[in-house]
Figure 1 (tube, rainbow, N blue to C red):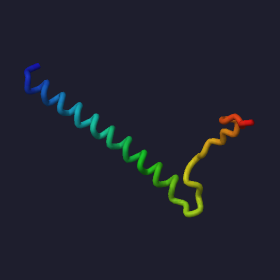
Figure 2 (figure 1 turned 90 degrees about the horizontal axis):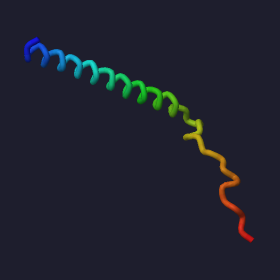
Figure 3 (figure 1 turned 90 degrees about the vertical axis):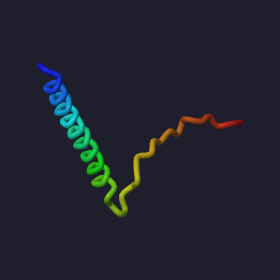
Figure 4 (figure 1 turned 180 degrees about the horizontal axis):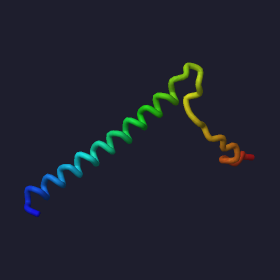
Length: 57
């Protein structure tokens, strides 16, 4: 393979990788938008750690 063919193959790989990365980001944005679309929905999960701090005397 000559340098031009290697360069064009590398370019095609970069294009495919960027498209896959873009698809993952768009899916994440869609998931976040679907999750937070309710008006009365809770805003997020809050962990309940009642025993985290010890009561003082």
